[in-house]
Image (tube, rainbow, N blue to C red):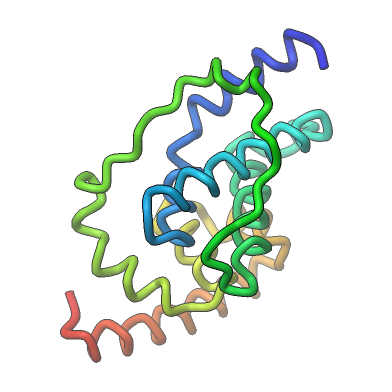
Length: 168
């Protein structure tokens, strides 16, 4: 790939890496697994980047690739994930350490969300990120109406989980 393509990818990734960290928080429970999943998502984004046409925002496309990566890696509830070799060119990406204290208020919610299935987790994540239903649908590959119905069912399910645990 060209240097321009690589440079463009690195800039977009640095601007949007918080997306990856938040997805990692939904699908992992420890720092090492978080870092492994982060690395795997970066690799999958890089592999897919030449096919990114810009029809949607980079963030929407990144959500889709990263959520699919996380869901496929954790579909069988694996504790250890198999990763591919880290390309040395990625060492130039400025990695910002994820600060769990910043997300402390969401810890209780994350515990409840982890009880949802993989697609429900992804939908909640996008909803919490203030994505509209059109963008949620595009990220998950479902219709906008389906996204609305699923979200209403998930809200009911989360209320029941939170009420059972003492709620927020």
